[in-house]
Image (cartoon, rainbow, N blue to C red; front, top):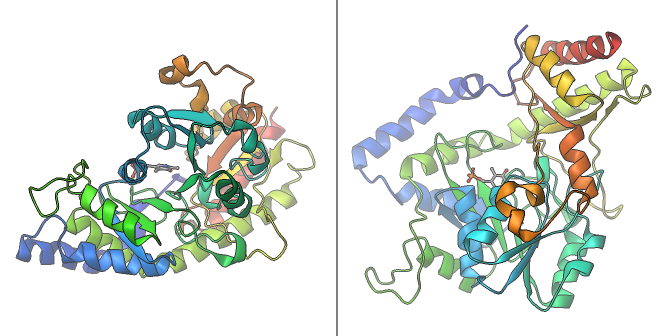
Length: 380
Ligand SMILES: *Cc1c(COP(=O)(O)O)cnc(C)c1O
């Protein structure tokens, strides 16, 4: 049986008529960029993410970039982040001319370890960018406390975690000064192209992001600020707006799939054998309404690369997020990091494997995937 890592065709077919209506509408109005669909989406996302404002932008990467620009972070500044994330998180720090400072992860949640942050703070530190990796909110309560104590800004990279909840049931993107989301098609709420959104509760920051999205022109052609072209398409906003209605249902399917994998792996004997370890929901305090949205279901496994090759041969999709931790990427050689500087991030890069978890995945497919993994280890 073929089990792809993601099946967007199966995901979109049931709602195709509604999506075609979006295309038709925008065709009728010819209002292609920042049309009424964008404003409508911004209102819906602000409400969904429990923030006062949301500003649609061109991608998740641009959401992070405009957030740093709106906070005036640039040359001479340091920004603390995790070494175990998609490259964009750190790339944007370098792009504004600031210095990325990497703080190792917690080995259970894969998110930045709050207890390691303070040692990395210097007089130049301006901000922290925690990432809600795989759909699990970073340990935001201690991170916000550290930020407050040291007068630092917090930009949440919530690209993988829309709808996820952290301490006190607060949603991803509502803890920090700014929250950044991506509508890349493989995210839990994807567009049919690129798109992203910035959330905030700060009216002054919301206003600045809104202006910077159109090169800082306000009124048009009068510039007190330098921004960029960070505009969102009407078609993308319309598609995301339609899909948002279904997001909670899809999230519930992802969580159900995670639960079923957990049962299957527990029965498989692979955990006792010590060859597979499952992702764990992490609670910073016992009262937290913890809520993982499983953008990815990521295991630690023995002989990861051989297992991945075996699964590929069996036509089962899997992926390594991410094979090289960011502090060891070649483009950051001049930062002077070396192997051993973030040991948990480095170990995760060697041991983790993402399995298919998308909402349309069937029980039969999940059985097939776990059986294949079992056969692999039995044959060793
Ligand atoms: C996807 C992603 C981004 C970038 O989003 P794009 O829309 O692809 O630019 C940034 N950070 C993380 C953690 C992501 O997963």
